[in-house]
Length: 276
Ligand SMILES: Cc1cc2nc3c(=O)[nH]c(=O)nc-3n(C[C@H](O)[C@H](O)[C@H](O)COP(=O)(O)OP(=O)(O)OC[C@H]3O[C@@H](n4cnc5c(N)ncnc54)[C@H](O)[C@@H]3O)c2cc1C
Image 1: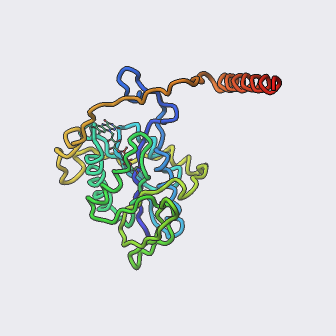
Image 2: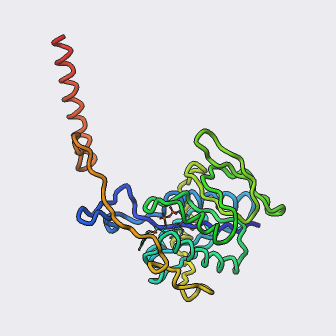
Image 3: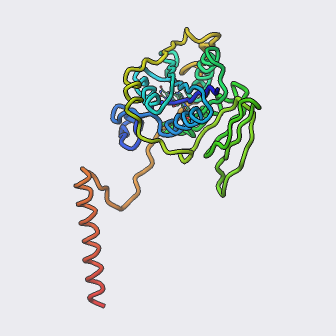
């Protein structure tokens, strides 16, 4: 029986987020919070492996209290347990401090039930670094496998698994010892619509919530802003390309504007052809 832990993060939906033109930073309040899309694939893969080999899927997140919603989404996908570490001490964490805090949470989860496999998304759509997964693996001293697009086999008895890693011109087949950490590509699976019983279970689910004082042997200096050596020197939006026309408004309005541009071009084209 496998115990698989998926690391998940709640992120603002970057498809709709607006930038603050004065500070050039993301206006997080302007977008709904969603489960990081790559992490949905991580959870789905964990659930598929559970269904194939038997076992339990836990998810863990570090985030503010509303991130409970992202955990519930994972329960809908088929996860069994959700753990959240939430505390002001974690605020302002860069990837170094995030991987440190998550490692401490993962250690505590493994005391409840030893862990065979950790699955992360390839990256988040707001931070985009892809550093947290490998950071956790380094701290736990287990093999990190990034860009995984297929799990071929998991053999707990003999302590190994086989995966495909995506390359620019194909893939490589890797066998690694367990436990290990995977960072998965979106193409590893399709996340189906949630079943009604899972939705009901998720709506009632209460995750395990831990504060900094619940994590044994934690060094508070390595958490949050204090534990984050990354310095953001400057943030700016790339200059808007010159020329062109910004299409704005509702979908109907946008379609209308695009059509009028196309028709205008068509008329010009026909005029030129007619005069030839
Ligand atoms: C100085 C500084 C201050 C910052 N302050 C804040 C802040 O106050 N609030 C804020 O939201 N961000 C803050 N950030 C951004 C923060 O560093 C990153 O969002 C966070 O460290 C995760 O990195 P990432 O988003 O690039 O994740 P990636 O490395 O791209 O994520 C890869 C995978 O790791 C896992 N993962 C990542 N983050 C989490 C998480 N929190 N819980 C569980 N699994 C996770 C997921 O599986 C994910 O798919 C700050 C960054 C800097 C540099």
